[in-house]
Amino acid sequence: MNEYDSAKMLSVLSEAGAIAVTSAQEADLIIFNTCSVREKAQEKVFHELGRVRELKTHNPDLLIGVGGCVASQEGEAIVRRAPFVDLVFGPQTLHRLPALLAARRGSGRPQIDVSFPEIEKFDRLAQVSTPLTAQDSPRGTAFVSIMEGCSKFCSYCIVPYTRGDEISRPWPEILDEVRRLLAQGVKEIHLLGQNVNAWRGAIDDTDEDQTADLAFLVSQLAGLPGVERIRLTTSHPCEMSPRLIAMFAQIPQLVSHLHLPLQSGSDRILAAMKRGYTVLEYQSVVRKLRQARPDISISSDFIVGFPGESEEDFERTLRAIETIGFDASFSFIFSPRPGTPAADLPDTTPAGVKSQRLQRLQRLIETQSHAISQAMVDTVVPVLVEGHAQKNPQELAGRSANNRIVNFAGHPRLIGHVVDVRITDARPHSLRGQLAQTL
Ligand code: SAM
Ligand code: SF4
Image (tube, rainbow, N blue to C red; front, top):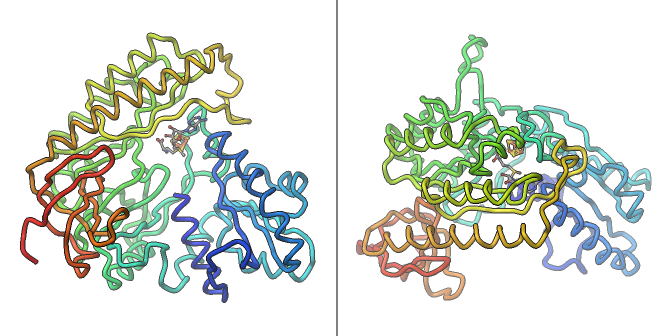
């Protein structure tokens, strides 16, 4: 999501005449796109701001901006704490950057806009000329944001407060953006949203009562010539409708990977988190998904050390990880976010215990994820070639459907294409392979 927003900021500013430079010393404008999901990320912003402050003494024209969720949450407080900051804008006002810059230059005063102007952001961004994304290098894949915000209000999470309520991007705009990307040679459409499966839209202008869902959207996109892969990030377990699950049986372009955060394997903790499902209900969704697509890989986010999490609750999470067979996943220690209900819950688990739990959980996930990689050895998998390999630029690197980096020898003309690769070795963070066909 943040990567996507950064790319949009770049597009909006490029259109207004800005040119990207490679070092902070050369810049006349430095923008921090921030995340406030956990406290550590938030504190880092102020640390980084302190580092660029002195650049203003060498370059009096330098403007400094803070965007994203820390900006949304802190608003004016950022300028109070760091008075050298010139712009503060939220995730929903990033499209107003050129206007904010002009107002700052005209008035000489810091500009703060952390409002939620709802659909305006999508309207404005739809007009931004291509290239639309930071990944316009011929990686073959592009993010398309289809909804913004979140109305779920999990008890620990700041997102509904910083990004506002769920709003869906209208279907015609999504279609326009996807068509533009396909014309640029994009093969994989990565649909983005905090809860991408909460997307709803009118099927056509004449019948506003007819509401389409993500299953409709996916089936329509899959019908466009050139769409070879569709990815979804992030899905909420409560919104895995039978129609959407059926898409995994019907739409081959939908990749065999779903990020479906469970968060905890204890029903008691899930209830305190206000996630809206039990472990059994989650397992039932996964069982149906596997009926529809037997080789689907499921990843998750986990929060460790939620207030009141006992050793038994944590053991339940480990058991759920084994039973469900999660692939590589993200895990975090609970971070109290001011203003969220969970921040006021009594939390007696010592920090050391939480760290140990996190390490145990991550070791288990790594073992499982490596076993999945190992099982891919000697099989042939389709790989979308994204560019040159990081360690050896003579080689190519791409992604398998289940999101693994695959390095292999091949001609650079394959970049941006889906090719069949035989997996020869499973490394801890990547796979090695050989082209399975002569191209
Ligand atoms: N909407 C997605 C969902 O429901 O799973 C997740 C979006 S959230 C920005 C990404 C992840 O950050 C969450 O899944 C959760 O694991 C983690 N997270 C959110 N708030 C947190 C907190 N206060 N402390 C630790 N982790 C948190
Ligand atoms: Fe946060 Fe829950 Fe919304 Fe995900 S669903 S963004 S965790 S409030």
